[in-house]
Image 1 (cartoon, helix red, strand yellow):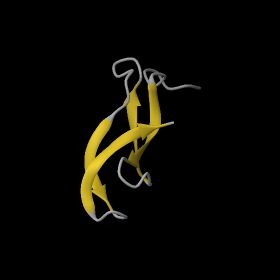
Image 2 (cartoon, helix red, strand yellow):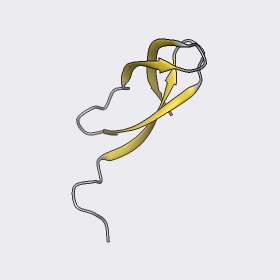
Image 3 (cartoon, helix red, strand yellow):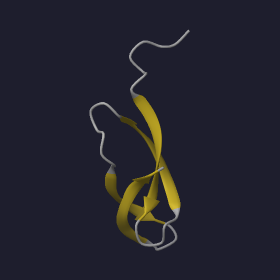
Image 4 (cartoon, rainbow, N blue to C red):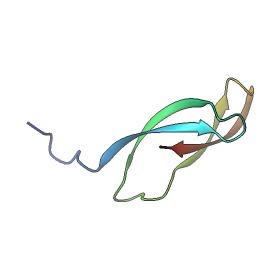
Amino acid sequence: MASKGKENRIVVTLACTTCKSRNYTTSKNKKNNPERLEFRKFCNTCRVHAPHRETK
């Protein structure tokens, strides 16, 4: 049985914009946020805080 209220939530992967490594996963509500997410997070490959964008 499907849980009520969870049908708009999807899991997305965040990739570093500098080195393109996929470091993080998160969930978003595709109804409220149709555009791609972007967060400033730490990248272990680059060893700096860099912007991470949602990938497909």
